[in-house]
Length: 448
Image (cartoon, rainbow, N blue to C red; front, side):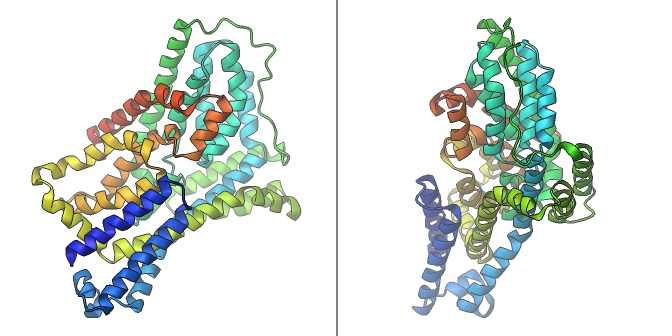
């Protein structure tokens, strides 16, 4: 029965990954439907007289609807804080963005730009990192690429260089506690996303330094190609204002942003409550008119709701596959065929292979298909789940925006008029190098 349960787990997770890679359905529907199908198989096997409940160690030794209800409830509960954090962080940053807060900062930076290739590439890192504070890859590409592409073209720089620098900067910024990958990893190990981020931030600092170093390297390569020494006077160096632009409260918005970040760092309140407080202050301040405030929230609510639904669907997956003990059976089956000496090398092997895997696996299939299996195997070797979460978040995040299965990557390529093949060819080894250096640094300072 243990082997059957393990194989059911592998088939279930494999089917989820397949559905996501082929884009046959949304992540939430894949998580819910496949998980419930597996649950129905377990119920049927129990009715047919197989000792499913005993093998899983459930109370009373029988797997029934009451047990299933408890598992689903526990699974959804484990991701509820993470889901709330994502929704309110997206709404908070969307209000900031709509008010023109980021636009004003970017336009100020652009106004200081000159026809210097080094300045252009370094400023690209700062702008991409700043705009990506909200964790939305699509929004970042929509703002950064149209603003900077004319400058790159006038300086005879490759558009693929712009995408590479953006991808490196955004990938490192994506480890913020409200970033999608960090939220997914935190939900897998039932840890507060903010707590996980406190372990990650030293790596993020190194990653940003590496992104700046990459910008300098790319600038040097571009200069050798003949880029630079061009007049930028006729280029409109500015980002288009939104229809809800409101610059009256720029400094108040800055204070509120620092206040919310301060609350997050202090740990005085749950992370999602910090953004709730920030939203309650910043929305009526910038948009006292209720109709306009509603339009601002409506413009960003669709992405927040979709991610919320996805996380709740993942909660059902976690309940049925992990809370039931199926993940442990999967890990035990792998361990039967895995040489014991290899256990200590699994985390770094996963980290090193994360960038190539990112080309194949989308974010959801990676964190909800691959990560649970890795966790179940490494648990037997006494490796802390947080270590696996850190490795998989850092290594995978670096490659998020060169992955063809991430929609934002395709959007960025379209805006820059660069083929996805050229983007991957230009970026892959640079991004992989940053990922490996971040892992080595994390190992060196004993984070992993």
